[in-house]
Image (cartoon, rainbow, N blue to C red; front, side, top):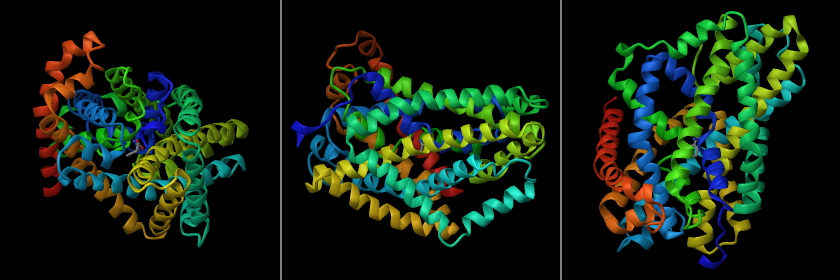
Length: 443
Ligand code: PHE
């Protein structure tokens, strides 16, 4: 199996793939809202500190496990430990990205439908009630959400079937730079609207009194979700990074890109929301009910500009969602190919069918949708993150971990940072994750 394993062509393409997984709906529909709700710049500072001190070491531990073993999630823990206990636990981290993928694909389907709507000029001059009614009519339609969920998942399947290099790598190489251009132009446009200042204040005004324990738990949860931690996507992608590359660079690069994208997305969405004089919200409603209304408002002045901006916005959402979705898909496929001996094509079909079925149920039962969301983001991702970080910090040998961290001693800066990194990995990250886990349980 080892011999025909593919590798990313370079560290840059690995970063683009990891960033593709990280940058997704979470950056657009949750981050801007959380920042505003939990204290603006104060929240951003905490988020930054958590990302660097807790999330980054976890991401690196996943990278170390993945690249050292050159295996899928399950195989990695089996190879690097004695006995089956650890790998049995890791089965949960094969399952959780597939659960996330099922409801994520439903929302991905909505974004494709909204891209079509934008092409048809559906939002020009519509009023807020009409925008809300369009969303309600679409999501309760007997088969349209299913059609778009199927379409979205099919697109993922096609990219994943093409393989690591010709599918995943190529897709991210093209879409990531495009995505950045799209979101930067949206932000420039949004900031130029009269009345956008209130949105900037909403995002940046520091208010430390809002940093409650719940805000802290949400900051870490969001950082995990946004960086795709604890579900084996980083582990699986890292197993395709060549042993010579510097994983500290890919880890830091991914974290920085993800954060930058979240901030720019905040400036693309919130100033426009405030300029239109509407209340910001979070979750699907922000993207599919609030933001389209901005395009309606603009429409009265210049209908074509409003259509073009709407198209750009929903195209960005589609790309962001697809690049994240394929990383979750790949976790399951790598597992079936390497552990069950199925061909890549057969594995893709199996994953497609399972995820499609659960997603179809999520599309029609909102309670199941939010159950899957809460289960994965509050518990399974935390569990996975704890599993990987404890495995790297307490089960693997220290020399192995540090030698992988510096790519067999190739990078002097990594060697210098080894002490700090190992301390964060062994003590800070597991304790922090445990505390947040408990907070989530209690609330
Ligand atoms: N990071 C993605 C986002 O921000 C979501 C995701 C979670 C992707 C887990 C892969 C694995 O939307």
